Image (cartoon, rainbow, N blue to C red; front, side):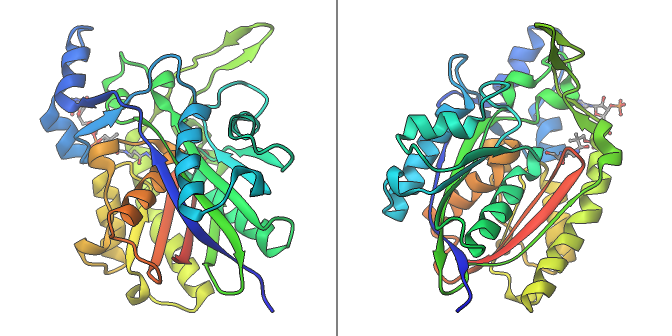
Length: 325
Ligand code: UT7
């Protein structure tokens, strides 16, 4: 009998400090940077984001999200046999945030590693966990996206600092006789490294280069709208399904206009597009599991529904996961 993987629990966590566009605009004005709620809302759909307190790390957000997902799945931390954390804002250069999370959860012994695919990170991590479960090397995986992007924002650059937020989301993915994950499709094009990056690095005890986020927003926008439909269609074809089978599209939450463009290309009505970017901003690898948990807990994604998850971001990376809940 074929072995599949299935999501059995979801969880998420947002740090308590919430900033509306007006709050952020007021903060930036005190630094001489001009922006407005109207600009941010019209261009991106973002109305608010959460920022973690300075002492809070990605593993702390991941811990809260993971506990909620484990509780929803009825799985104890010690029963987990694989931990994958997707993050571009790890606690340390090394070891991985997944190892730090493992310790905080008290889940020692299982393999634990990070996946670095920026905003596509959760889709990458889910695809890797699915493959490991199908191969029989894991049976109960914890897959997490966690970010503190506020740490790598340049608050003198209004073209980027208004876009991002902090948060974490997690799923428990278990072996199953029935799918579960129906198909995955991952891609990268390293020729576009420079359009979205944090170019600095640690060398000789110092940070060399710029340790803050740089983005050519228009270049990212154009690439994103081009590739997302292709990845969606690839998963549908692999699974023998069509657009009409999608009950809910949960894309990476970066820009409402990109999400609506993908939904239109897949001929999905507005109610089949799940949006949290208005409340979370762009939380990079955390955005899809945060949205997924909101959809599940809010009753928008129900058992048996077919969900399409799609990520796109730095690398340039992109991918999709089609699944039955
Ligand atoms: O998570 C990874 C994936 N990332 C994305 O998907 C991001 C994709 N890109 C985008 O979402 C959009 O390109 C942005 C939201 C980043 C920018 O929107 P845009 O419509 O491409 O605006 P733009 O960069 O062309 O800027 C338009 C104008 C410029 O002024 P001028 O040159 O026309 O006078 C900017 O200086 O808006 C100005 N501007 C701002 N004004 C007020 C840029 N940022 C701001 C701001 N507040 N925060």
